[in-house]
Each structure stands twice: as C-alpha cells, then as structure tokens.
Amino acid sequence: MKAEESEIRRKRRVLEHAVESGNVAKTCRYFGVPRTSFYRWRNAYQEHGEEGLRCKKSIAKSHPNQTPDEIVEKILHLRQKYHLGPVRIMWYMARYHQMRVSDATIYRVLKRYQYTAIDDATRVRALKIYTRHTQKNAIAFVDHIVAKFPFCIQQIRTDRGHEFQAQFHWHVEDLGIRHAYIKPRTPQLNGKVERSHRSDQEEFYQLLSYKDDVDLNKKLDEWEQFYNFARPHGAHQGRTPYESLREKLN
Image (tube, rainbow, N blue to C red; front, side, top):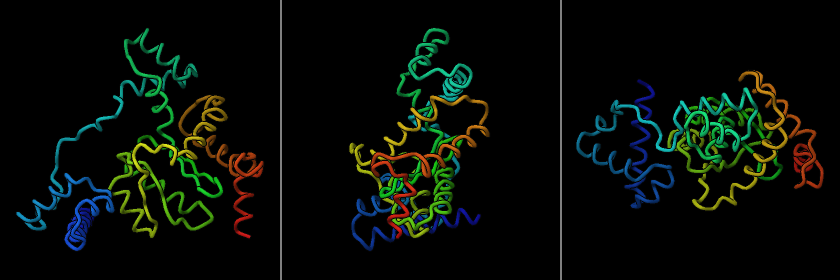
C-alpha cells in the first residue's frame, strides 16, 4: 500500500511540475516519463482525482525488444557447455535448432546480465551480474555503487533502456544524484563503457570457464579488483584507475 501511495505522489509531482513550468515536453524529459503516460495520468486525474492515478492491474506484456526465454536459454547453454562465441552459436542454432538469431543479438544476451558503472575521470569501475535488465535491478546496482565507490557521485548518465525509466530516474534523483540520459544516436557519449566492455570480452569472458552463477560472480569480482587496482590503463599512461584516483584526491 505504501508503494502505491508513493507512486500516486510521484505522478502528482509530475503533473504539478507541468502546470508550474507550462511545458509538458520539458517536464517529461526532466522526469523521464513518456508523454503518452503523462497525458493518460492527466486525463485520469482530471476525471477521477487521485483515484485515477492508482495503478490498474493489467496483463503482463513482454518488452518488445526482449529475446524469447527459449532462445536465451539455448544461447546460455551453448556458451556455458561448449564455450562457443556469438558467430558459432548463431550457426549452431540455425543448423541444429532452426532458430535464426543474429550474432549481435547473441552478444547482447551474453553480456546483458552484467551491469557496469565507470567513473568518467578515473575509469574506476563497478561490475555486477543480475538475471534480468529491470528497473528493480538497476536501482539495486545504483545502491551498490553508491556504497562501493570511495567518492560522492554527482551525476549518472544512462541510455534510455527500459530499466532506466521513471522508477530508476526518481530513485537516483532522491539520492541527490542527477540522472541524465545520453542523447539518442550519439553512441560516442557512451564510448568509455563500450571500450570497457570490449576489455571484459577480450580479457575476461573469452578466457572464462563457466560453472555456475555463483562462480561467475566471484570471478567477476576478481576481474573488477584486477581492473581497478592492477591493470595498467592506456588513458592514464600505464597507471591503474585507483592510482589515478589517488592523484586526483591529493
């Protein structure tokens, strides 16, 4: 019940901000809310008051870009048992299972369980494995990095994935951290994360012998420690991210 009342207050806050600013588009960008949702809330509030802002139970729908569970399970099975790369998994699935999936989709499935946070100045990173990309898990990861990073976080930038929408946005803002979305069609703004993912792929995942999720989390933590404290980084002329951090803190 508390969660529902909190959601009602959040919706009212959005509606009130639009009235005060006089700009619906600006309000929706600020709160990370689709305009369709805003107008639905506004119409419901005008017609039914706060009662109209209560969440209505609906039939659960899959995210339109979500890969079917059957395909995900097959991809993970082939990776874990035979250590195949994305292209060979694509060929194998097409040949023996009549499942046609692109190598890009397979790569996204293999890496999508890893959440990555990287500090823009020092390249210090935090990594964690979750079973799904959801707002709940994204929120848990934010709490994890706030507790883990040895400095105050002023801003978090993300893409516009479904896991980084309204609930995530407001959780970050309520922590006193600004949440900004990377502009569409500007992948270079997320370049540091993508380059760090290439390092994960080349120096960690390709050399990993999968056993189970617990083992994977343990090994990922070891890799994170090595990356932050021992691995020379090109952006710092061979110094590690934590050496760079110590220099900036002195």
